Image (cartoon, rainbow, N blue to C red; front, top):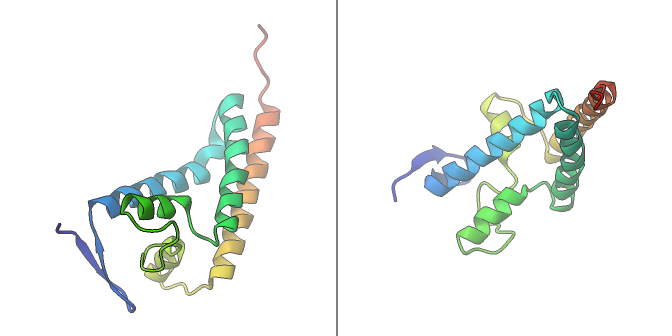
Length: 135
């Protein structure tokens, strides 16, 4: 299968259709985390307030690897954690390297967790301020 080729120092990496699909799902999840706090209903904010900590916990317990990477490994018939997968746990590192920002995995984890905590607090504040309509 032909794919998009990306040169990296360690590997010659190819994006095939499945890689692009999972990349797209990653982008959707990142957009949800980034903008979910703007939801206008209490129900949507409540769901966001439940999902966000679960995402953070999963990410921290999985060593900075998204469960989406693990699912891609399983779909490809590889083990849950596959050191041969060049995309596993590198999404933000590759993104930052693309804009010439060098950061360690610990720095990336700290900043992302701080941002998600900030989004969570804002979502909680917005949910509290929404006055339910009388029935």
